[in-house]
Length: 473
Ligand code: SF4
Image (cartoon, rainbow, N blue to C red):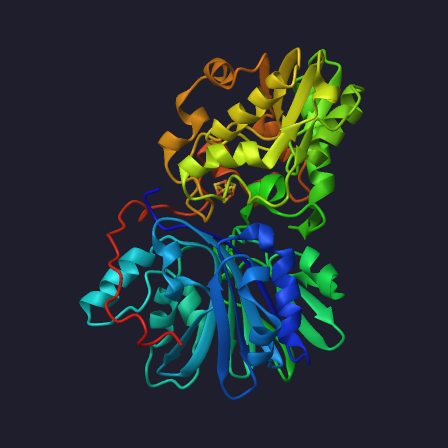
């Protein structure tokens, strides 16, 4: 991978006796959004403490570490990143920084498109960076203007380009933000009198909080002892919803409501549409777990072909798609799934999956079915072919890595050793959404980028800072 990228989960709660414990449970529910590192920063109204490390939420935190940072206000972050930065503990979020206006913790989900340019500008003017994370640019923006005591969030946010859902924690305030396109989800919940912010609503269920509403594109919410105050930080004419449709297709948990609809029901609808668009004569429908489960149900329902379980998943191996090393991806497919020979042997099998990005994992999965004795294997994908890179925070930024960018459907079918291959059309996919179709980003399928990608590819190499421990605490 050529650039630092992130895909992350955010969770925060303000004014709650066991805020840190609640954030721990919230992050556990968001674990699928980032398995490489986790962190929590908390405040008692006077100062910020934090604990963070590489690993799963359950590995990073212990009862002792949670009790050491016990405070009534807390935000947390789970992270997936690639390209070197994952080894640098200082890049693990929340970033906690002491700067000219006091202490602040920042957690970011998305990708800042002009971060490298801004960083270069700052460095040329003598600013020192202490991490290799794009997110640190935000701190430098916040330090300006230096004569103002409190950070001016509107000013900062108007300078950022790209995809960002952000959580900030100062000593006495929690702030939540969505970029003006609303690429990444961020929802507001309430637990008794405490406000909660989360990337996905499944984390509200985990702690018994109620969903209130989504943070809107271009909105910043300030949560403090006086309650919640909302502000639209940019000119309303610059707000253009472009919700990442791949959140609904692949990333979000099926029990979450994202962008105003339930993820499971959306995926089931994709499956129904897929059955109409790409029918096949077969004996059984099976899903690639977990991602293909809901769409396979829809496919079976609409086609009348019975649904069965053809794969069993080993839950103790990480998600295949989010492993940074291509080499480890092959091995993990085999470790992760096993085919049930008694179900597929001698059958014509329709396999439903949520996506084919690089093609290598799909190939290994189909091979498992052949080995288990399937007579025919027909692959059906509940989204269109990925032909374009994502520059808004998802881990496919290089066109050469996308199998559909460089191969015809026939070539992909042959590469996967499938008897047939069918994708859902972009039209079919967008026909399943709850909001108007022009409110979604579908750039990785269509090449229509809703936000300028002008500075993408102009990144310069970011050197590891010499004195890492100076500012992040
Ligand atoms: S390009 Fe694709 S993955 Fe990236 S934000 Fe748009 S829909 Fe989501």
